[in-house]
Image 1 (cartoon, helix red, strand yellow):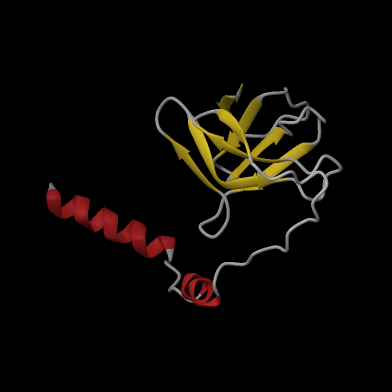
Image 2 (cartoon, rainbow, N blue to C red):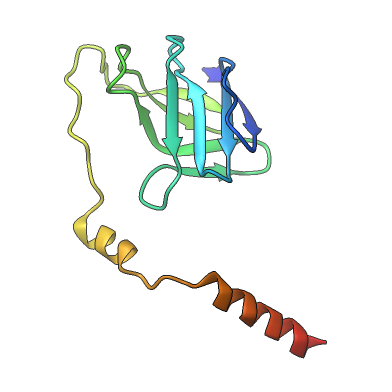
Length: 133
């Protein structure tokens, strides 16, 4: 199994190193070169209904799998605890699967939730601190 390094960065560098995951929390994005070695840039935007990153203090995992359907290599793999685990399917010869959307109920619930005004949160935090002293 291939081992990856992870680097938390403010900005994604122009020149990516092979076997390195660049993680920008400010931009909620993880970028790396394709694990197959084709040198294609793979971008995984982090979102509640998209890719999710788990950092356990030593390693990172990304879910769901990385499926490079639009690349010539059509690689399909998982990143778990800094390790590349290849999917069992051979997507080099198989047709690209249809994109799956989260169930409509889940999408509707997520996007219809009330938006929080950051100014209200800051005022509430300040008031709590004032009364705590």
